[in-house]
Amino acid sequence: MSYQKWFKKHSLKHKNIIKKLQTDDVDKIIEYFSYDNLKVKEPDFCPLFAQNKKCHDIDDLNCYFCGCPFFRFNDNAKILKSRCETDSRFGRKINSNGVVHQDCSFCLLPHKKSFIKKYFDYDWSKVMEKCDETD
Image (cartoon, helix red, strand yellow):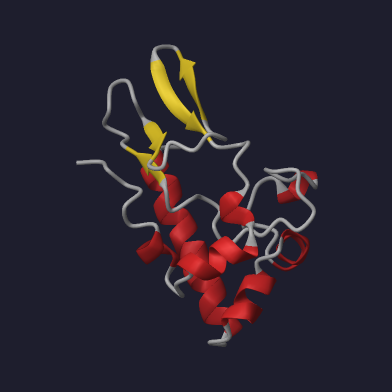
């Protein structure tokens, strides 16, 4: 699946959850997106839920920013398909068959409640709009 397809599909999942919650309380929304809650109430949100796995091994994992606002991708790029806008020291590049992808698996920042509160928007796609650099 391309980054762009995932992005659009995931944005719709977010939108539907926010609509279903029927609240403007940011703290309640963020709490709803905790890994432990989401895997029970929204089992289709992430394919890892079915395997009882986490993308990051942290106790208080929050899934609101499944995908980071600083992640950049370009599905049309020939070599560099994705990168980190901040060039995080926790990120690394993976070269697979001559194509370079950003590996964010060691960066925990977007899964922390303080980060989520700082960048929160009821519309996930607004916060993430700079991610897609595809022309």
